[in-house]
Length: 100
Image (cartoon, rainbow, N blue to C red; front, top):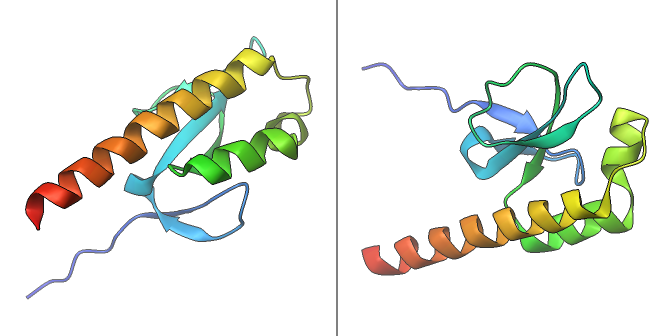
């Protein structure tokens, strides 16, 4: 029986290797726009961040994406990131509790 490998990526904030399904991709495209890419398929340079509220807060506090993409990032991006991560983490918690 074959075992399936779980795709792993490095969280840009913590430096830990995390299952890709527990991350969201952030992309910088050729036009210099930085945005969330939940599909993981958009063109551009990508970086991954865990679907964890505390990690999202830390990313903003440490200006992680400014450093990664060498440009100023609009604070609204971090608000959108936090809202997305918060929503995904809440969904995960809800569905985990339903399976108990």
